[in-house]
Image (tube, rainbow, N blue to C red; front, side, top):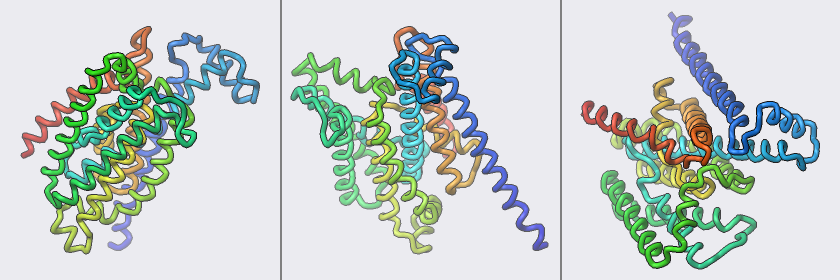
Length: 345
């Protein structure tokens, strides 16, 4: 009997490895296809010529090489933002034990948008500590929202529903302040709308660095939390009986989730539904909640954003906002998921 017992574990490991390799392969294929699409209208031969120039270390003065470089930076940012939002969505759904939870429900995007509005209102420009203002401002606004959420959590304690409702109320309040500011200065409306719609339009090395920094901090932290996280998913009483500090675990999950969402929204504007989609897509391929699932969720998030961006710049001469594309697919899925959750209850 003892020789038979390890077989299921070996099968599970092989399955997990196959799922990760397969998902990574899909992401690579989608990434490769994305290089050939864009508003510049380069022919495939011109794209390949630009890639050869880049690989050969030729000067970047040729238009083909410059355009291909811009596309690669855009795709790279899409991969990082998708991975970040996928992990953020998983952590938030875990913290609330709710498959419908999403980071933007807590006012992250509202805080970022309000900060961008204030920057436009004051006419600020330039950089802050070598970071462009239009990245530093939304990042600061989103992190201030995180601070308010932490203060709220200290008051509310263990009531998850009250915390979620408080986050929703905070989101509405920030949107109301944004509306008031815009109504007093209609001339800044175009700047704030362009920021919220920008998606991966203004991809840059700085934006990639900001999102990558969030992931570098978050991923090891999440991996170290996997044991208490699995206990937390069963329930507060079960986790406490195993010696898990439920409040600390919950706050840690919320903190990391909002940090990831904040860096993503700072670099790419509002990108909805990617964080909601990714954990559910990962669940279709594996039922276990472990480190493999964390990596799979990030790969799913990256794939969702890159595919969404590919559609956004392929369906029209003038590019469709990435958030619009993801919402077209995400809204029906959210309705279906709500109905399914209601039936289970």
